[in-house]
Image (cartoon, rainbow, N blue to C red; front, side, top):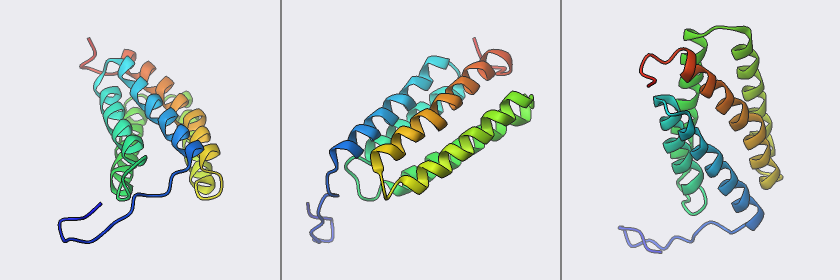
Length: 140
């Protein structure tokens, strides 16, 4: 590929297992749309963009960083509006899952994505699903 400045860039190297992990995470993010509320839709769009672009785009780290900041903000909204102990425990599981996933990212990419799906996305989905039904003033 050639940039607008005429520089040659190569696509990132392909790791099929890591790609499968990114597809799993993109599908996990897409599932947040099932919640039918604004946080779920935002997580779905950001997550699909972040995990989808990371498959082929070398500069996806900026989209991933934006997705991470948004998700941290959504966790803060859930904790601020419904500060039950279950949400705090879920937030702790998500934080630990995110940290473990980040640590494994360079060593075992597929395992990293699988940990992200199981320890970040699944508990996050459960928390958002419950929050949308109890606390979202716009939920229909």
